[in-house]
Length: 319
Image 1 (cartoon, one colour):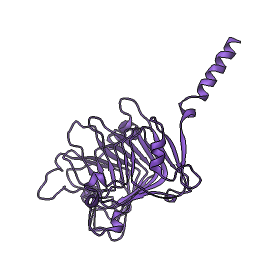
Image 2 (cartoon, helix red, strand yellow):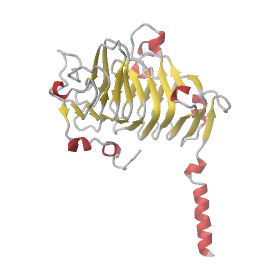
Image 3 (cartoon, one colour):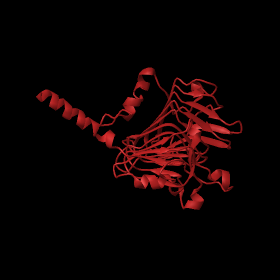
Image 4 (cartoon, helix red, strand yellow):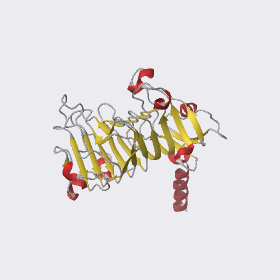
């Protein structure tokens, strides 16, 4: 009998555990909230889940609470669109332009689109961030990130690396459209350059040799609009920028050198940056013509950049 009572107590504890108590709020058609920000504000201090009905949510979002989960309830990521239209010239700076700004650790998003459509509305060239994310242990799956210059700011908080995992995502833009100093891993994502004279996929900003920071792209696909001029893997926003492309399918006319100096003739970052590539395929794969200061990795060297090796951290996180 004592064993049965103990078993019943254990099952009861599980039934009211953290997952069972987690708050779920519904936003949009049929939900209690019309605004995503209102629903975020209504969540308890320890976060919760927002289920987003199909539709366009035109609002500027700030998500600072931990463990907030956004779930698009449409059939496709295109069915739920979070969008705003701010540029650095209108918002007062690049980092004020973000449509969605996420600093709360443990953030998750699935099956939705985050967009900054400034470039479709204002003819003045400007940085215009769709998603600014400094959250640690962040996971985005089947998320579309749409913009032009500076689409995705994937960055760390001061004093500690922010680990971010992007799976089956789509990211588009032109100038430096994935930038920042996060420890970010892109798994089977499509990276798309939109029409522009020069397209820089990355502008990673690792600033010290001992900083725990890197962008890794694994089994991703690179595509580009026909009107793209020169297309590069990226350039170093800070001198120790670290970017690795693993098993990448390059279905675009990537510049044969692959990497470019931040400002040719004025800066000297290629001597200190870590730029590497392993087993690229497709029309843009050209290891013999790459910038000499970049590296072609061996299979053993590539293992050091696996998802678990890059994202584990001292807590052993496995997204």
